Amino acid sequence: MQWGVFSFVDNVPGVAAALAAGLDWVCLDGQHGRWDDARVLAALDALPTGPGRILVRVRSLDEGLIGRALDAGAHGVIVPMVESVEQAEAAVAAVRYPPAGSRSFGPIATPYGAPSDTEAANAAVLCVVMIETAVGLDAVEAIAAVPGVDLLFVGPFDLSLSLGTDVDGLLSDGAAGPLGRVVAAAAATGIRAGAFAGTPARARRMAEAGFTFIAATTDTDVVERGLSAVLSQLS
Ligand code: 3PY
Ligand code: MG
Image 1 (cartoon, rainbow, N blue to C red):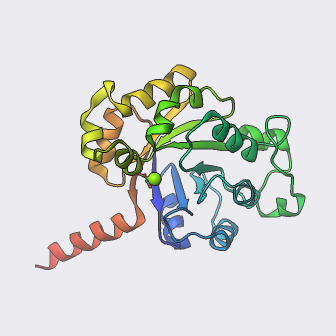
Image 2: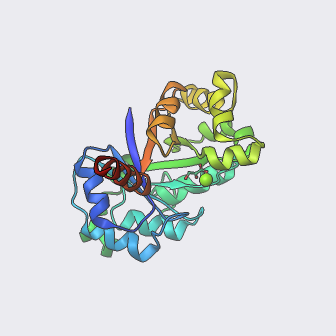
Image 3: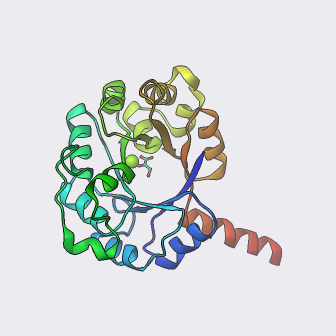
């Protein structure tokens, strides 16, 4: 199991604290969070290296943003709203150098963390594609089979909106439902299935559903829980 946290607020010490606490991965959210390109690059320059992975959710399937995050030393990218084999292939191409993909090599960035050995970089980097629409779900088995896709990651909020249900509904559907379908598609091609949970209670249910790479919380959730705990000790 790989537990992670989504960082919405562009707070570098907060990310360092999450890694020091032993989270397996932290995602700097450039889609819905405050992490714009400049902040992502500054954070990757400043964060210490350690066992925890730092991933960047780019705001869209954009090879320029993907390349910049990886050049700066991100261990992988999470690409939102992937709906087809073609989009999954484009994500892989942006993440990996030739011959596996078409990522552009930027030696000037190497001092800041990008490996100069392109084969090692290709092997180490994670290409995570999000399954979070009905269209993406319909293509999930084919997307899972795209060489170079390392992980299918469910966005349960978008997916439930797209399917006309809610996150609890998705979680209640069991192995025969959409979440079970994603887990099975990943298992069939030997890759991991992950999901955004956002709270520990939902994270446990995602784990029971078979996901093994879960965003168990968010930085804003942690602050809220911490302050509630403090307030309860004061009253
Ligand atoms: C979703 O649930 O749609 C997400 O993208 C989580 O951030
Ligand atoms: Mg989403």
